[in-house]
Length: 82
Image 1 (cartoon, one colour):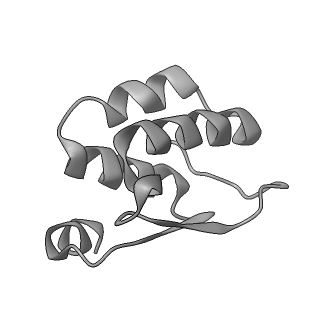
Image 2: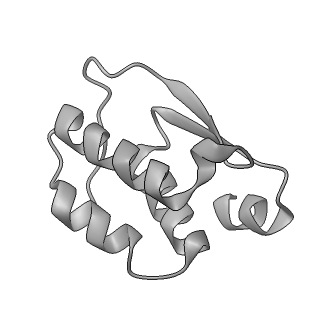
């Protein structure tokens, strides 16, 4: 797994309980962040898509947790992210 360095990427939050928390939004956001951070977008996207929604969210957080804060009231996701 790659280590994300902040470069000139702004930090922001995504509420997983909102429409921004759907898989397509997270995949699109990941693609843009990969481009901005110089990561292999195909590798990250394939890893995100290799399991269920919880895997997708965990993988997103593993790669982009230093620049994106994921918020949710879903206990399953909270436990997966901690």
